[in-house]
Image (tube, rainbow, N blue to C red):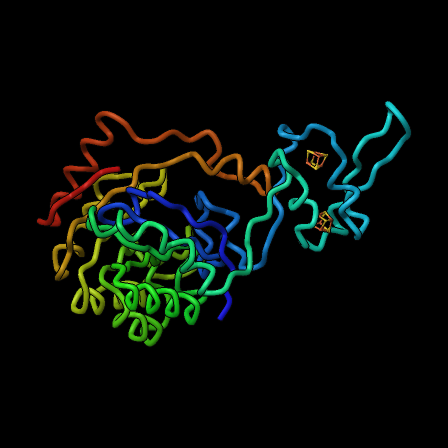
Length: 302
Ligand code: SF4
Ligand code: SF4
């Protein structure tokens, strides 16, 4: 069993309780216009390019067998030329780029390889109440691989969680539930048309799935708070009313806007329509928190 992994982050404190290792899978079934991990949207491996880190060693050009990076000119005047249309995202250039100017996002891994990494911190999980979280992209876009990781964790006595947008067919979640201890799920917008406008899909099935999941497992409901998308007390209040009717909610969490993904958009040659936007602070944060508290559950703001 193999899957495409973008990253395995150890000692994470943000992806569930305790100390965790988060396995980020590649591929998403939504296209949120504010996505701060744009390298995870496509399931295919991709090259990220950070020219400011380049020291001109030319290793990448020597490694590229597809004519996408070539050395042009002679002697002191030689320089790299990029023909991106010829790139097949094979990753050979990234393998020999030791400064991180060329980075491969997405690596094929077996379940055993993933387990070899996540098993290193078993004692930390046990002592902190942590475990392993499978995230993305979207964890359910590679459902068999996600299930196999979760089942292997359970066999090793490791607590499990997923981070999910809840868009997948309910049958996918039904298969994952026996191998899960916790589900961290997003409710991004309450109005379905607005949801479609900003994510590419309506939210009818998502809200239904959230209700079903809340009857099965402990859940953490999260809303990424995005400037001019859902950052009003009215919108957060609507989601809070929905959360109020759910069972098994550990807490409702607002994730304030995080501009950190900006460099990745540049590295992928993609346009970021939220470029330059700032996280909510002060009075905005207070009003949003107050609106979230209408859910009647514990509320966290990150
Ligand atoms: S291998 Fe990396 S550092 Fe060297 S020339 Fe290529 S991009 Fe620059
Ligand atoms: S990913 Fe492969 S084809 Fe693309 S530039 Fe690098 S070595 Fe060449």
